[in-house]
Length: 278
Ligand code: C2E
Ligand code: CA
Ligand code: CA
Ligand code: CA
Image 1 (cartoon, rainbow, N blue to C red):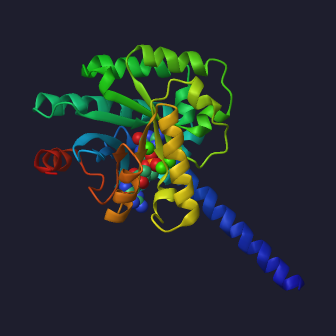
Image 2 (image 1 turned 30 degrees about the vertical axis):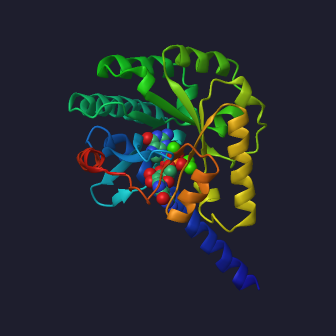
């Protein structure tokens, strides 16, 4: 037993060391990634459910590491948040996405919305509003075309000036979507109080539609609440025609998922939007 205990401990230490050094590796490499152009954005179309037309895209960041290949954002965003790099990374995403939208517009792709993910930690930085203003100004995009995706986490940890910051950005013309809706545990009161125009039903609720009784109930409740509050609803992770039909029949406004398109690099996305017929 003693022997096993010691082995267990050694195993634990090995695991810990591996994890810590992995994290340090990511952190050190992340610092250089932006300067070395290892980051890029991909764009996933959002489809208006009632008409089938492309309403806009969501920008999603990718890191192409020179030795490791693609590292998913779920792995490096938390590291960036921990080591203070979320601010420059987030600013880069904002600038890049706004520039892209303007670029498409100049190329004749008009009327699209650009949804941009904002980490709670990024939103809380004192310089956030200035960063957004600078991205809007330097790209020349119409702020009404830009939607910031925030999460319930941001709203759950009280921030003195949360309301006023949301309102200041809203006054600039931007809109807000609440991402990963249904995965948090916060009260729904804020939905009425805050200037949020869309909620995004999390893909974990969409995955087993139709058929899963609980997910159907959550979806129905979310859609009817959204309607009562005058909010639009976006469903993410739509992969099948059956999911599309279920959501559309129950009044979901916008659909996003592999059924329509995967997130694509800008050229591919531009062509996809051009050629998409519904
Ligand atoms: P999210 O914002 O909830 O994004 C949805 C995720 O679902 C994306 O993963 C997307 O590629 C994936 N997805 C889209 N359609 C489908 C589908 O039909 N089926 C399935 N199974 N998945 C689908 P991705 O790109 O790996 O991003 C993961 C998360 O990383 C995002 O979740 C978001 O929280 C974060 N993230 C990505 N880009 C950014 C960014 O620029 N800034 C910040 N702060 N976070 C980002
Ligand atoms: Ca999102
Ligand atoms: Ca999500
Ligand atoms: Ca997420």
